Length: 336
Image (cartoon, helix red, strand yellow):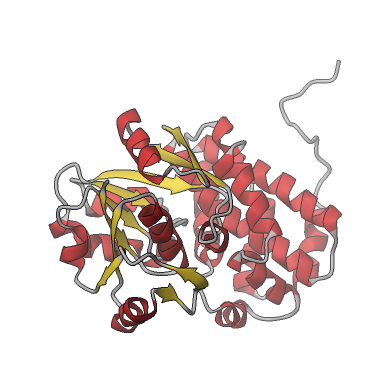
């Protein structure tokens, strides 16, 4: 049994707390919001974000960050990506040397273009930082539906420890040393999922969705490999796997926000309607910053940025994608 501090009490933090407690681990859940902790303590259910998932009696709750962090065998950082840096900064003084911090949020910081694990390593240099990512909606994990995911870490021993703690009959965990590739796939797929949702909102069909998924993973892999990620990672769970589930499911807040934008909502109106953090909005500008830095073309992500931040009509963005210069599908192939 491991002692685990769950830092964040939203839908994903709640679902993982349910999973870990059912795996026999001791879990304490932290939130900065006193009302949220009071609700969880009384109802044992994240009523607003993950209704129907009842947390076991063994799970405890606190607003005291020191209590949730100090002396725990493993910390799971499950706050939305815009709050990763500020939360990590608050945790720093309570984290011991070599204490494992597993990031489960997805995003890229706009101002610095850093991945979330890079932010955590900068704010908590004494921590052993790992990531957990893949096609895994909280709504399904919290119901015990079979899910497969990947744990990334700098060392094999850390990745395998995370694997052992999270693994269950309904939650299969693979390991990988490609932390950068895992995080880039996780963050950038949210931007492509916005595009998929926009296409749905415009009334387009399965052909359009398939095109966006296929060309979207091409863009993600193009940037990811330029930055040093492994191509195989983008063909795996945190790449094409996560992209498929996020583009296709109504559990996806990015797809839902995209649908609203396709129907004419502004980005701000769509985010307000979804009522949860839409990670792709925060990663979209950062993606273009990285594209510029590494000299990579990201036509789908570029059009998403123009729709989100420049008021470009969604139908016009699709037209511009379709009328781009003619291309060969796979650039390094040769005619026989």
